[in-house]
Image 1 (cartoon, helix red, strand yellow):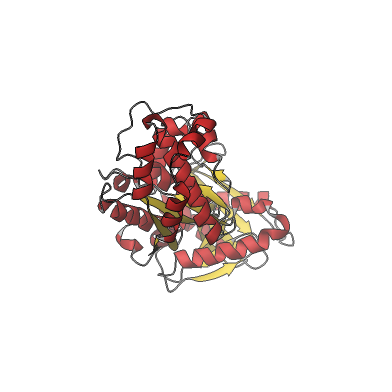
Image 2: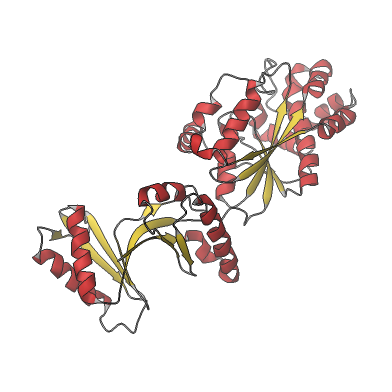
Length: 392
């Protein structure tokens, strides 16, 4: 009897003619996620991926699979020969090891040439368990579900199904530039983008000496966590100090955040264009702060030359925090180091800016030259997963 892990595709079943490409990409991502388990071997099929454990511990391998987008669910399965006597013996052994009180047997028979139908297999296996244990059958709410799949070459036996990340394989949806602030929201938004198969690059706006160098360490630590989902992430650090000072020198304080965000989108659009990123993404949630009302978003976003995706647009803070805890970024995000959006106190920022008024303020200083300076003096870092086990 061989021990394997069976991966299920979920949404990939909707991909039609492109499904094989998605499956191959998922297979590459799975192999990368499990690269430290040297004994594993893989069988990538159209309906499932089978991972042969070959002595590796299921619990250790399964923890890594939870992070791989494109996997809907997975199960530890036992691969048996096409032999009913062996199936009876192993199903009974599995039931006794689980030590439950009620059970149900469910059989699928893709191998239609197998002479015994699914319902008869259910009865034969259930009878074997009933005769040799204290189990009772419960077809509605069983404590133990025994699943059997009869294929052309083997019978597969398993019990539990573990839900995974779902979504699409990373890289199948193109590439985006993620605006990363260091707060709770943007790392969660980055995770959700990757879950949908979109690779991310990140841009961060730094304003030394107003912002502490510890903010950059914080950003790098957040990205280190996110390398559990993407093995390498580019980080572009924008020297934003001079531009931000000019904004606060020339612009009415109530419009300062609006103009600052418009400048950020201009810079992000330039960087994304050079990097061939298809969209800009951020961690904005509707109404959470003054710059995230519908009116503010409309005025701010108009300067972007690329579409802007907001994965958290309709999430409330409680739900965002739940995901942040799940992906282990929350404790890093709440470190008390401020980013450039919070260093200058703005009382009564407008929540309904006027676009014409914003343009008037922007004409008071030469922001194009300042933007050129920002783009031409980026610091570029590459965050990799080499030390990810120290953080997971």
